[in-house]
Every structure is written in structure tokens, then in C-alpha cells.
Image 1 (spheres, helix red, strand yellow):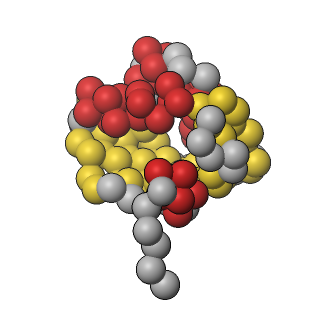
Image 2 (cartoon, rainbow, N blue to C red; image 1 turned 60 degrees about the vertical axis):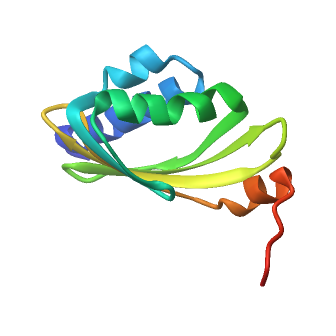
Length: 125
């Protein structure tokens, strides 16, 4: 692994660890001011907006397990599983693009179905 690969993985893992443990100031320190986040709910732009988006979910977590992380020179995808009081298992994956030791782009993928079922939403197939 090259030094830049190690750096991308380290930054992504540190950001993930910080937001999943509720230390949002530490998480935000890894974000570029103009970070853009592509989430299932839409596009979030800017460090403050990404933090505000992540904060309620982070606060609801009762557990998070990092399942895998790896990287190339400028990106690090990771896979994890989270849980909260309503949802015992919610797998997710994120792809981080890193420039100048900061996250400039996040792409989040997760299954929204467990959350919809926990809310009692009617799901049509």
C-alpha cells in the first residue's frame, strides 16, 4: 500500500469512527469546507450542512461496526453496519473522495427499508 493509499484509508476510517461515536467536531475536521455528499435523501453541500445531516442519525446510534475499508490514491470505500433502538441492523456503505487530506465527496448507500418498517410505513411491492 502506498503512503497516499494509507492516508485515504486513515482519513475515511477516522471520519467514520468520529461520526458513529457522536464526536461530530472531530468528524467535521476531516471535511473540506465545500464537501458534497450524495445521500439517498438527496445532495447535501458544504461542511456545516453535511454535519447537520449526519448529526441526528449519529445521535440515534446504539452500535456501529466497521466491516471493511480499503483505498486507492484518492478514495476510500467502506462498509459498515449500524443499529439504533428501532432498527437492530442497518447495513451501509460510503465512498469517500479525498483531496489535500480532506474529504471532498461522500457517496452514501444504505437500505432505507428497515427504517421505513420501524416507522410503520406501508410498503407496496
